Length: 101
Image 1 (cartoon, helix red, strand yellow):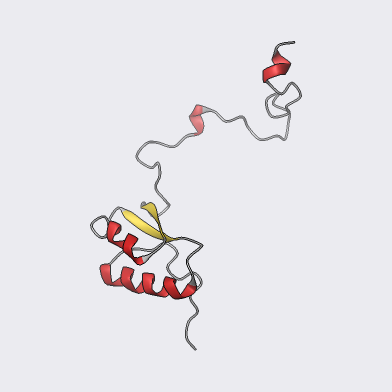
Image 2 (spheres, rainbow, N blue to C red):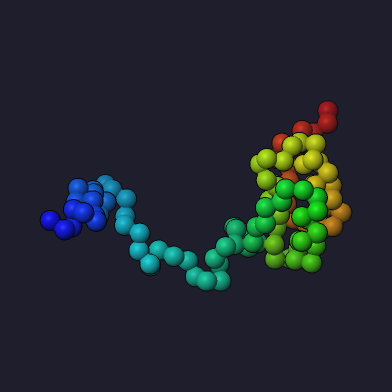
């Protein structure tokens, strides 16, 4: 049949078998005001170096920074210090930074 060429005829989710996940539908979205916001109500911008903090300087009420996972611990410390100086919120500011004992 033509259906088997463009749809999985044995797909359990599409056939709505008990215990399967639900099909994605348009009604599962969130309202436009909350879209792209994290739980604290900020948009997130990925930061790779200190220079990218300047983009957040004027937007620090609406946008929060997230330090990329590829940034080293040494560079992370300088980014966190600069963000504190510029009053910029970092969502993962204390990640991979050991407290000095």
